[in-house]
Length: 243
Image 1 (cartoon, helix red, strand yellow):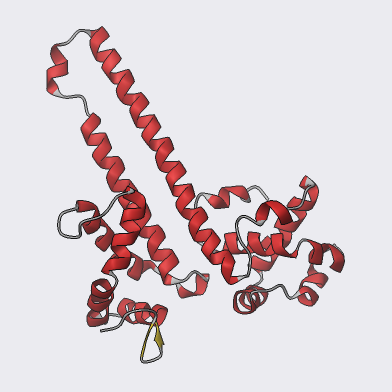
Image 2 (cartoon, rainbow, N blue to C red):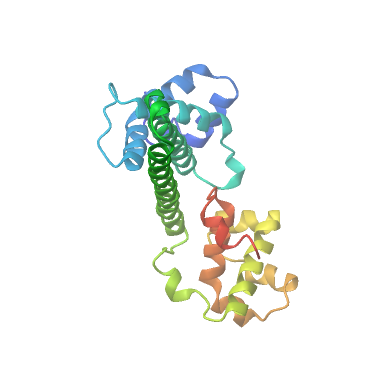
């Protein structure tokens, strides 16, 4: 039995890759051993205790965890825990949305009502659906912020600090974002940043038209944007998609 991130000095990510390669015993043990992690991830979405024997959402979480094993790519930089939690969250949210939709489907008894009554019921249903979708997006963003903050801590940064070290001028901010995208687009530099958790300023300078002082001044913000680009954050990436 293996828990935590290692068994015989094998990392969790390596075990996942072995499961992808066809080792069904490892896949089964991963799913078995990480059920508490799955339950916790599902509970965070549902905002309530999850009964592993009774709640359908937990079954959705198990399926999502298995899908995460198949679709995980170690080279992207995310830990498997971070990636799996996002996959579980999105699958459970999709399930909740589907259940909500089924409950809001107009039943047959409305067919005998007047057009006015049906229209009123339909408007209430659409309003409720829109509120749910907006709530879903907000929850997705919150989940990603929590995951993002955890990842930033590996670089000795935090989401709360973003307000402090974010450039005040819009042009400077866009320039820093472009540098982060350039770093992300250079495999050698990207790998260096992922491993060392810092910027190789000497390697970056020949590629940009800014001073060393400017890079150093905005170092934390550039790193934060790099982490955002390097992770599977669908909602938060909207922040820099236009740059």
